Amino acid sequence: MKINYSNTQTTNLIEQSIFIRDVEPLSVIGLHDRILKLIEQAYPDARLTARGNEIKIYGTPEDFTEINEIFSQLIRLSLRNQTVTDNDVQTLLNMKKSDRMVAGLGTDVEDVLVHTHTGAVVRAKTPNQKMMVKACNENDIVFAIGPAGTGKTYTSVAIAVKALKERKVKKIVLVRPAVEAGESLGFLPGDLKNKIDPYLRPLYDALEEMIDHDRLELNMTKNIIEIAPLAYMRGRTLNNAFVILDEAQNATQIQMKMFLTRLGFNSRAIITGDVTQTDLPKMKMSGLVSIQRILKDIEGIKFVHLDQRDVVRHKLIREIISAYEKHDAELEKAADPKKSGKKTQGE
Image (cartoon, rainbow, N blue to C red):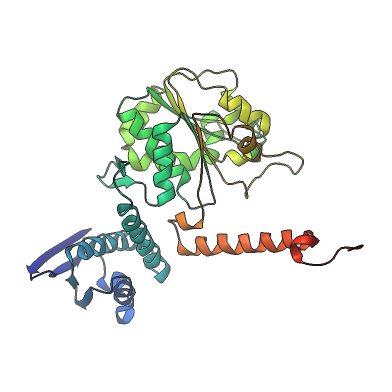
């Protein structure tokens, strides 16, 4: 992928050209300049024109920087033989909007967490993600609770990698419940790694973005970075470690207590989950639900709640979450005559 650009300076605005290489320009410009028009709507002070493989951008230096990054991402999608859709463009625009929102919140917490092995910046993208970072700086145990797509896992892994690189801890332990296999995992084919990989893949994905493959393999071989199912935590004491329990809504109350009592000297933990997506049997209460009442008044433990405003994935995820919240509220209202406004017998 190559983007070459040149610029002409004016008073407050600049005109710069991006030259698209390695992909068909139409794939990132859109038929009848559709993608250019979407980007112009998000940047009202900028003007975009295209001719051949050249895109001219007239606007502020800040606008050019963001628009250039957007086209870089669109080119990466195209290089993977993916068709760039309007939703892809809107998702990238939403992420840039979140970046600007965070930038305006002040600099009391360092936004940049780590750099990926390709040099890209990993940072808190929304106010509540930034609150997660702040909470982790001030507390030993942090609960990050919110719906899918709010960056709970990714931000948590970034915080842990930063702590390891700064030598604040000696190892990272990433844990997930393997609910679908009843945590026995025995009937799955292969060795232990083959059995647990499907459940732990999201954690690998996050790590592989932040640490180059060879170093990650070396760290895992030396147990500096460990990924394991929740069932394998029983009986252990974790010293000088940054521990993450992901998908904690699938941990029972007993498992949650077991996990929290694994923390040893100089250890920190982040527990993430979405209480609306538990896969536990109906008769078992999620430990993530009860723990909010049990530990609410303990100093050194912080609960951070994320919502649809923190979604940085596909824009439809935000709408899906809102639709489900509306649906659940309607069901609750229908089940409770007092909330529905209907008179009960005897009133």
